[in-house]
Image (cartoon, rainbow, N blue to C red):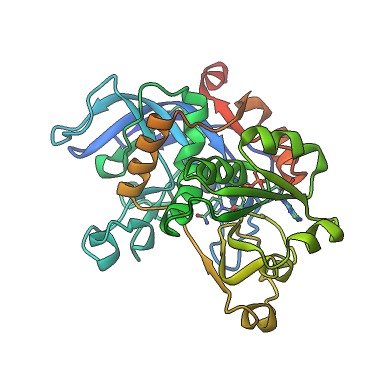
Length: 352
Ligand code: NAP
Ligand code: ZN
């Protein structure tokens, strides 16, 4: 074991603060990574504040962070994909059982024995896993992604969660070219959803509660912007969408968005509010519409997404912050004041 610098929360009400954690020495299949940037996902905030208590209670101290990009410092003897000096990425998963039907189908995110990057039982050290708000991490090579060399690293980090979480459902939907696609909420996930839907040729419409984000939405690739609090604008588009991606992190009126769908339209939820959303059967019955959910993506699909981003020069629009400003960033996240992902420059941890 060795010591790594990190930021952790001691309880659901404590701010994140500097700490030292234990990491394992790399085993023969492990890759040790010096973390250069880590994105701040709203899931980090939900977890740190124990907002998902009823589904996934938080074990403290909690070191969040699952949008990790860095440089390989050491590899185990059986590692074939990486060598010291390579760029590497780690997302929400660090282990799974490799034997279940989900793992065999490259859907490791649905493995019953999956180990998530933080707040998950740590098979090596006991306790729970610690995430990317740290200067280094040690991960089984199967869960380490190759990073295209042409992309700016601060903006690559968020691809590891916000990127794959939006790429996967949009890509899976089918041929989206020319279809009317809605993205609800212009935050970390939403702005990536806009970029991918646009890259796949859709007619992209952003639903936002923040009128001030309209210009940015258009710059990011949206063809139209609807201010969702304006009933008249909502009415004009009712019944016209083929597919909607809902990224809202808080309670909201789901039925208002279902009513935007046309015949057999689908709304896929990726946002994870702590409380259940009310669902009107009538909104689904009229138009044979459907609601579904999507969770990140498997490792193969995550690599495919990163390669796609390399080819099309897609990264996240980030506000780079030192780790000392992480608590302030959380407050801004709650207020939907993020443009459009915070990316922590981990060099700032050296001074702690
Ligand atoms: P974020 O950056 O905070 O963005 C969420 C956006 O939702 C906000 O910017 C805001 O956009 C909108 N919003 C927030 N509160 C709202 C409210 N009360 N009513 C209407 N709109 C509201 O969050 P994120 O990191 O993108 O994450 C979004 C959600 O996805 C979180 O719940 C997160 O835990 C979840 N998530 C799920 C997965 C998965 O695999 N399914 C992966 C990662 C994250 P506007 O200002 O444009 O309205
Ligand atoms: Zn995330």
